[in-house]
Image 1 (spheres, rainbow, N blue to C red):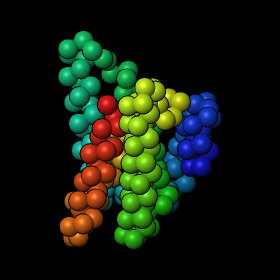
Image 2 (image 1 turned 120 degrees about the horizontal axis):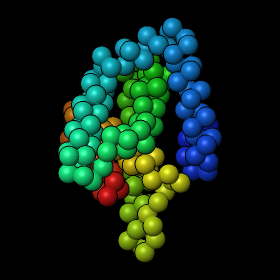
Image 3 (image 1 turned 60 degrees about the vertical axis):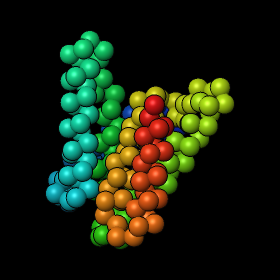
Image 4 (image 1 turned 60 degrees about the horizontal axis):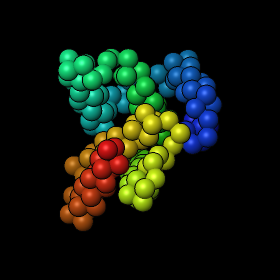
Length: 172
């Protein structure tokens, strides 16, 4: 995971190699494979599947209008690192909350930086690969939405909703 994340900023080929090794690990070990499948039975997993559905519908609409094609979905393959990370790090509810919370903080921070850079006349690129940056911010939206919906505290709900808006703004 560390090699994968570091590769996002410095070396796309290193990111691809790390991604491949993560997939081999998850598919090779039965406990990881079962936990990967189990992830999609959780609330986070269902929320993630709904997000994927919206992604596919959006690409389908863009394809019909001639703006894109389904080959662009391949550039979003890094989004599947999220369930792998969940498989590796989600052991209980507290771990799930810590993971989602830290991811929201991470994605929101990078979104703020990208927005600031774009408004200052820069490119707004945080990572070397623009589709990886889109995935980073889109997962920030997913994690913030999940966290906002699953908290009882009004202050936390407001904070996560604000993070969701910032991550969404970073997508554009």
